[in-house]
Image (cartoon, rainbow, N blue to C red; front, side, top):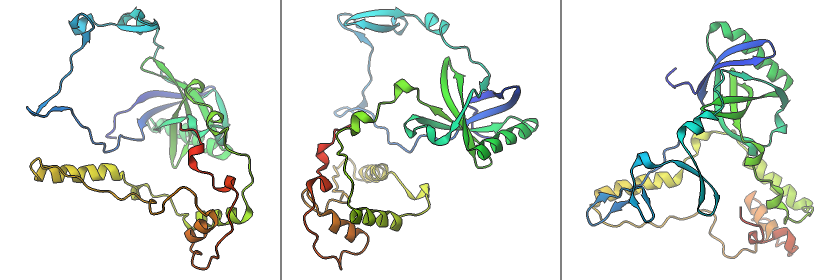
Length: 286
């Protein structure tokens, strides 16, 4: 396997231990990285580490500090920080099992592939995989990596298992703080029927390869044109989808009918209550 293992050890379930290897399931996208350049000279900008009133400082004079008050720091050296790191254990113990739907999507952070370390581990690995699939459960445990403990889940994925790093409770905002201002109203049946019809019309199998980062694609095209233009400035207008209409107030019934292909036959709908087509600006921004 070409990828480098993120972790090697064993999954333990009671008295059963399964040697495994864990590999990253994702990689960074094709992002464009810019550097800051001094335009008159064409030289790249570099940064020095400086202290106010002192000026540039040597790297070996820098230590980590935690601010306990304005301008008041507790200083820690690397040895002190290393001393409190969690010992990297080579066992991932599954301590609890939960229904998959009990874990809110907000807690999922990053997926990894879990594979048996050798042929001898395959039988126990397959038993765990199929038992999780049959019971529709997700295993929970804590993985020690690089001095930190990560909360993780284990669940079936095709012929194998996938491990997902989960966020701890104090890393997730409560949704109620963002949704409390949404009115408690019942949508009109006709509007709901049209919305579900539109969803049905646009339902299709998920094919991630069909989606691209259009901003990155546009940057690549701009960089290619710029390199051929010998420094000439290039500005292009990019038409944004969904900006044809003007104003925020819409006839929701007419818009939904047009979306599902009934606009040509639709009669003008009476004005709806304000709460049915409320401007988006009422919501709080995240």
